[in-house]
Image (cartoon, rainbow, N blue to C red; front, side):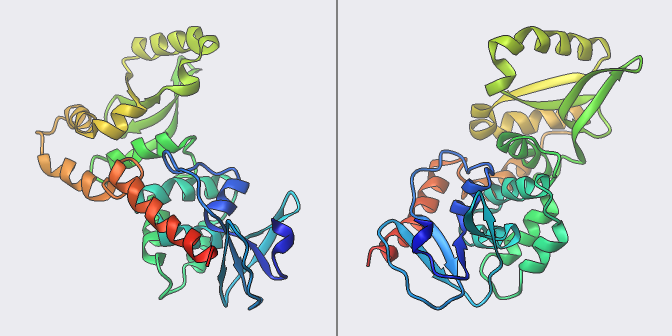
Amino acid sequence: MSSVLPRDSGFGSLTSAALRRWWRPNRLGRHVMLATTTSGVHVQRHGLYVRRSRHGEFEEIDGIPVVSAPQTLVELARDLSLVDLVPMVDCALRDGVKADDILAAARPRIPGTRRLRRAVDLSDERSESWWESMLRLLHVLPGLGPVESQVPLYDGGLLIARADLHLVGTSRFPECDGGRHREKERHASDLRREKGMSRRKFERYGYTTSEIAGRPGMVIRDAEDARGWEHDPRRLRVWWSHAKASTLTAYGRTILAARLERYRLAADR
């Protein structure tokens, strides 16, 4: 498909993100391939939407032309919610993209740039998975921070664990359970890790992906307890005000699917 692109063009948005092996939004379905061109040449191919732009920086990944990483995030910000956009920024930072370069690409009057700037503020290059980013946001957005990511824990100078998150000022360490954390070959080492944390009075609270998505109130109450705060229902409302439009919910997935469908319809005209 890249052979049909004119000069000064490259795959962008979710297609660029996939080629970069960035984490995908939750339960993202099939969608049209997306590209950007500054050439002014009209390209029409089934299954390919090419956006014309006056601005574009291009590079190659495995010989395939793509828009630059900062520009990819600008394009993602057009369609993704804040909650879905933050993990993409986390990935970019992990790949070595500079926050200043992302902010420089987020020029005024471009759709989504305010959201992208907010996502940069909330990002953390230490995040190691999409769900870990979600768990961090579930603590930060409702005001339960400060939170540190990937915190090393020691016992007598010996590293016993690297916790996903730490509620700074408490002994609580929220973590994302599931996937590789519970594979059979890791089970024994995980048990040793948890015993070591328990001996040092580190409170490990593991949450499954279904709990992060479907029971955020439980996570919020746990964090309130850890800080010795009274329960405030406004914190959950703040979370849902952000998360409702994200791919954590069926509603948010429907919104994103409708946005991507518009590209497909435009490509097939």
